[in-house]
Image 1 (cartoon, one colour):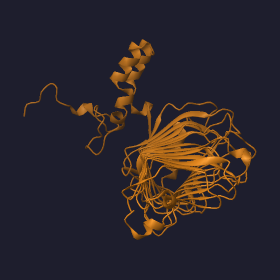
Image 2: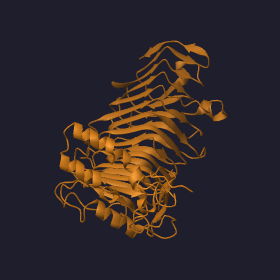
Image 3: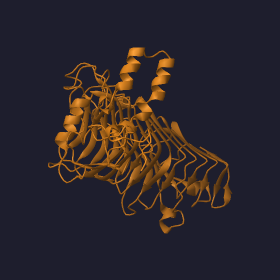
Image 4: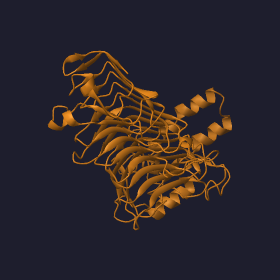
Length: 458
């Protein structure tokens, strides 16, 4: 056989077992160089030089850099990708290198922590990132990226040996965090995935999950809290194309882990974009502190029809902790499978709650639908005469909605604009209440194929 000058030679395989094209010898999986090509490749480098952001010496250094300059691979640190033995020590070694040794004040990591395809068993809390306290270390560690090859491909199983633990804790120490392409599986109903403790001038802000899945059994997913007596717990988190499965004894997202801590406020801002929320039971979001929340697109299902699951549980405590109360949901398909399922159960006494082009009528043909009250508003929970401004626009709705009042409503209104009610034909059957009538309005709505007369009361 003739060998051409452009054929790959044996000496093109480096000592680390990878070819120049970033594929491991034997073709088992893409190498780290291939993963990082879009981030550190020649195109990105040329663009940065053209913009004058790098000098010739920096360009030369980047051109000769290898994967180890950008990546910390947990397998290279000894992690068992079969999941047969715990990988806590390997993940901790990887995190230590990611953080440049012992965590430093104001440090910005220069590498990505990579989790190759496989299943990794962790049995000890805080193996993903070390717990260090922003209160003990001035400044924060700014910029962390933990990446897998995609959900179901890179899977981390948390099976703690002791109950009531936290998988990873951010005590005001890390911010600008990116987790992507990972599945997290819980195997302890008393364990929490993440405890995020926020405060003014500390970490936690701007944590973003992309293409991440949670499933299995957990006590809670992410719990937002802060030091006693601390206000303005600005934490800012986002979830993009994520999947929330499994079951939660408490809730997937808890805003205000200590409901009696009245000083806490300003939980801002939260975005869920095009997510699949398909959990067995429990609560999706439990909000004790108010805040600004956005839910855009996606499919939301409580799988167990015999459970008492709720998507949005909005509580309110003392006046100090609620400087913002805002929930916005748009373009979501809610699947209510049981008579005790709730899309929303709200005790807010001010703020705004908005549903735009949402649909919860998938099971409106079932016997339970007529008696279902999947949207509940408790105007009497804190301030007996007040509620939020609630708007439904271009929505398709199952059953009826219910409002509880104790006195005449002086603030707060329910407005239905261009909505279709699958199981009601009049305003009186679409909206029910206990106590004095709330302030409400129906405009251009349909009920069971007939027009509901425009109504405004009182």
